[in-house]
Length: 64
Image 1: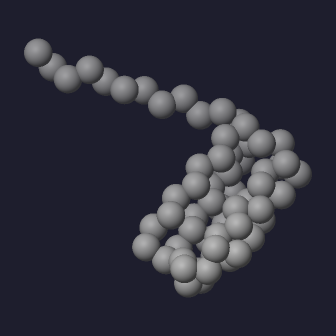
Image 2: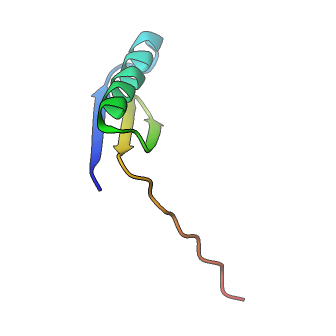
């Protein structure tokens, strides 16, 4: 499995930069064979993580 990440720092109040960061991540995703994309908006940073193969997340039940 290959993972890629793009981190762009900018002022979060500028909506155009939000869109540019998202589009940059999507362009890379398409060229690498998108399976999963994860977007995180943390404070004034956008983190775009891309995985080229699906990931499986397992939730464990709480003990009784």
